[in-house]
Length: 151
Image 1: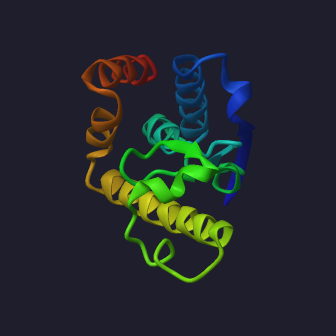
Image 2: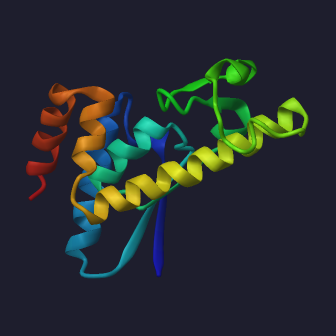
C-alpha cells in the first residue's frame, strides 16, 4: 500500500472546509488509479471520523484516547474525570484496575467497537445513517453536496 498522511487541522478552518478538502484529496487519489490510503493525523473525535470516512479518509490517529473520556452514550469526548458518570457496563469500567487504567482501556475498547461499526456501515453502504444520527439531516445534506461536487 501507498499512504498519504495529512493533518486534520491542515485541511481547513472548520469542519465543512475540512470535509471538502478530504473529499478533494480522495478524488485526486482515486483519479490516479492507484490504491492509496488516506490517513488523517490528529483526528480522534468519533463524530469527525464518521464524517471524514464518508469523504474518503481511510485511517486515523490521535491522542484523544489518552486526553479525554469517550462517552459511549453520546460518542462525544468528555473530560477525563467524567468517565464514572457514563454508567458504562463495559468490562473495563467494571474492573478492579485503577481509575486511569479503566478509562484508558474503556477508551480503547470504545474506539475498537466504534471503528467496527464504521467498517460495517461502509460495507453496507449505510454510513450516512450514522452521520444522520450524530448531526441530523441538514449536515448530511451539506455533506452530500460536497461529495456530489467531486463526482
